Length: 573
Image 1 (tube, rainbow, N blue to C red):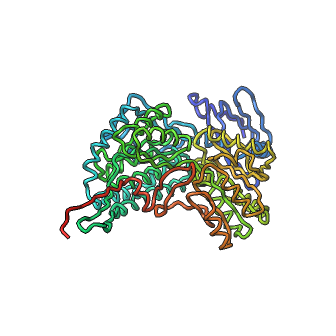
Image 2 (image 1 turned 180 degrees about the vertical axis):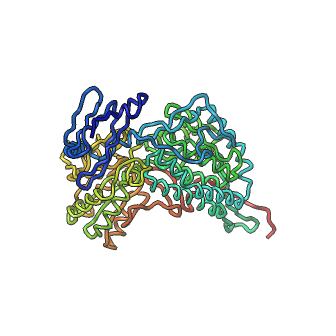
Image 3 (image 1 turned 90 degrees about the vertical axis):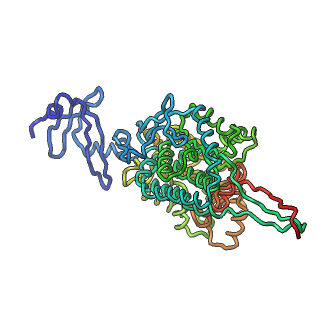
């Protein structure tokens, strides 16, 4: 083949050319991206000879296969750099891609905006209105005004509207899932799962709206009747995290609206687009103006907005999901006016595998509990305690499962099963915990490397001890540390040696042991032979410093209701 110049072929206006080299080495397939100023091909028969201009030096490649093998060794995840440079479009309905605040039934701009980024690429998705205390105050005022009419609607009327909202979430599930993947980084399969989960709370609380029963209590006096009435607490401030940008809103808002409360939602600064899309669908469902308000804001304005919606005397309730440290700040804000408060805070879940366990089922549970959303869930397992009799076989099977099932990439790629962490700071935290553990004697069995941007290899550690950071603080990332134990008492002591207690998991086929451990674990939720436990029918919440109150279930709506005692006297016996 004659020497050809690709720059000349593409024209002088395209001096920088993106070249993708598809290749197959053994069973591994990938593509290598390069930006070229000049690419000259000397031969098309093996060995392929290509001359690249990379940065400021000439690189000659005479044996492509040898080069590619070397490339594979230097890249922990073949093809991952392509994720960082490829353009991913947000192809959704224009009506659902909202970037303004939603206050009193209107889309409202702010004096400034802040960027929302794709955590996989770091590229900007949209600029969103950066609402401040003024917009937050407007939202509180609108919610307070709307409360007086909303609470007077019948339970059935509220139920019908929530059901319409549920139907719209289900109808637009694909677009809503694309938003989650774009701004949160989840694989599409997980994002679709979150939308189904989010919608289920609207369905559940549309039904619970008609079941907020009071009581008629037998009176001691014959001329009296005692009634206990349940009434909505008022305006509820809803502050939600980025890891479940749709479901954490509907789990709170569904209960609040069903009870007759109105809400002001402050979504996480990383994921406001999902909240604003929910507002659009609420409007389409016919939720009255002022009942559902969304105030997006940047990280810089979050403290002032959060303080206002937690201290304003017109607000009767605060519900927050996030870190324990932030929860304590909000509790102080709410204390000034003695507001009702619900807090779903940090977790540090133990995952215990006893000798009697079905090891294969335990591995399946571990994979589901640890690597969902790249380990970024408050109930994901953080400390894996494995009894000595099955330790080695469990670790071996777990490592093989990680190799087979975990494919890192952009969430919109159909083969991706694990996306990025939310930002580079999150990846740095995981990397720090890995280095700390290794410095104290832990052994890396899988992964262990920080990748480009906010990506982190799924990591399996053995020979872990309770002195290491990964066993003392929540990771919120794809790090799986395994501790070996000998007795049930030892496992419980390690599991309960934490100031938080949200969720816990264990695998055992010993019935007596199941009852003992389930009752002795100091957590609010226990998964027995199960790695996933969230469902709208069951209560969600923790003990210790993992929070206050419960969400979901028949108890979730109680968080938004006051009990009023009415004594009806002067009756003729």
